[in-house]
Length: 225
Ligand SMILES: Nc1ncnc2c1ncn2[C@@H]1O[C@H](COP(=O)(O)OP(=O)(O)OP(=O)(O)O)[C@@H](O)[C@H]1O
Image 1: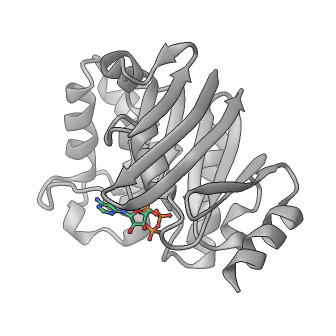
Image 2: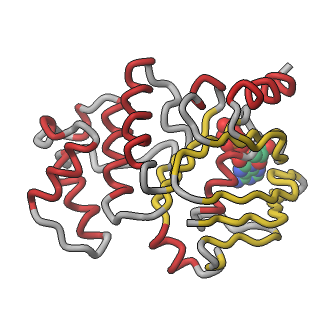
C-alpha cells in the first residue's frame, strides 16, 4: 500500500487549511498525525477519505487517483471524531446493519468475531444509548473494519478517553496495523506513543515526518509555545 500526497492545498475561503503538503505513506503500520487545534488534521483526513474536496494537488492510493472516489472508498475506512449510531439499536444490530450496507455477506459468527476483536462480544445485546464513549469508539472501529479496507483513517480516536481506555483503543489499532495502513490523529503528543511514523502538522504545513517520537514532540512543542 502506497499513499502519495503531492502539493496538496485546501483553502476555505481565505483560510489556508493545508498549504502545499507533499508526503508518502508506504506500507502497513501506524502513522500518527500530530497537530494542535486548527493544524489541518481533520481536513487532511477528510480529503484522503474523499469526504472533502481538495483545492489543488494530487493524491494517489496504490496509483489510483483520489478523484476516483468509488475505487478509493473501497480501500479506505474512515472513523470521524463523532460517529453516529441509532441509539435504540443493539451493538450486534448496529454491526450487522453496517455489514449489510458494505455489500458483503456475513455469517452470525463472523459478526461476533469482529466484535471480539474490539472487545465488545459480551455487550452484543446492549443498546447503543447505554454505551460509554470508549465503547462507541470501539464499535466505530468495528464498523469501519467490516468491509476490510486496506487503509484505516481515524480522527482523534483517543481524545477525551482515560489512560486505560486509550491503551485499549491503541492496542486494537496496533493489531490492525500489522497488515494494514492505519492513520490516526491526535492533538496531544503522548497519544502518538507506539506510532511507527509521526507526521507533525502546523498551520497546514508538515514540520516533521519521521520515526523518532522525541523529535516529533520537540517540533510540536516548539510551535505550541
Ligand atoms: N468547513 C470549514 N470552513 C471554514 N474553515 C474551516 C472548515 N473546516 C476547517 N476550517 C479551518 O481550517 C483550519 C484547519 O482545520 P482542521 O479542522 O482541519 O484542523 P484540525 O487540526 O483537525 O483541528 P481541530 O482539532 O480543531 O479540528 C482551521 O483554521 C479551521 O478553522
